[in-house]
Image (cartoon, rainbow, N blue to C red; front, side):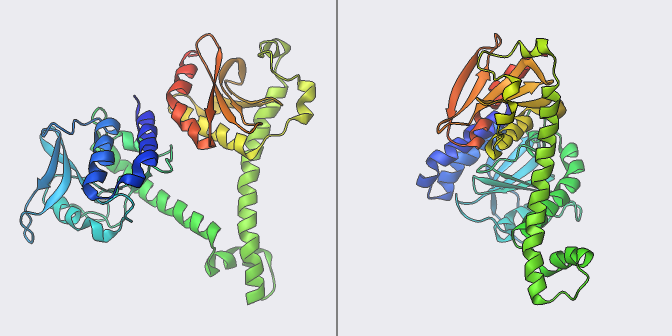
Length: 357
């Protein structure tokens, strides 16, 4: 099982069993140990790989323990502190990690409640754990863009130097993304004035500020939607110019291009297409993954080629389905409840793509 599938499987387990987890020990047994074992690939029952209740006395504290230490080549590489499922993570939870970071060889520290994993290193000062994480993995809402970074910590591909080298960019990029998200949700005065001053010549009164607060958020959202639709329309335009011989290879339920004007691409189809692209970007150039919308389904192709179907999204009905193709290009439909459930089929999608390479 690859890391994306392992994360999806653990996320599903958390969703199903999270409500019965009431203690820190239960959190470790149910969620954290499977993360270390199934996702990162370490044998949690082998003390040469994972040491539970790891002790390393400091000058100010004796006998204090960190929940887990990951060992590689006989050296402590990663320290892990766990909190109870559902508990909010904060700096007050990281006191032991701070102290241990300076007295061990570890360059990576992880703070987790079983769902959210915050990854720290020492970018700001050598041998002193940073106050802010450079990476955050939320298993309730997995960002596929950070999965390759988590993969660098797996037993098979452990590369602490690679992690450290990319940590700075990841840390500040993630913080900028959070600032942008926060401003889009509730823009502050400086953010509003920045845009208002460039398009409005009058005095920015409270009434004007309130007006531009709403306009700024709407303009940003419209811009983002326009960019997504622009890429999609461009891909669909290329599709409409494909050759007749390629069109003949369409499955029998394909709609004739003369019906193209009746095709309506929904937001859910666009979201599903972007999820498939996110999954496939680990295996192929993302530009090779292209859309094909019809009246009966939304298709995703490799190389804009009807003979290379990756999947079909059947979203124009009450029950959503994703159609997966085998090596003989036979489609099998799987019922899904949410667009995000597409991540559960990451392995099958990658396997389908491999048939065409």
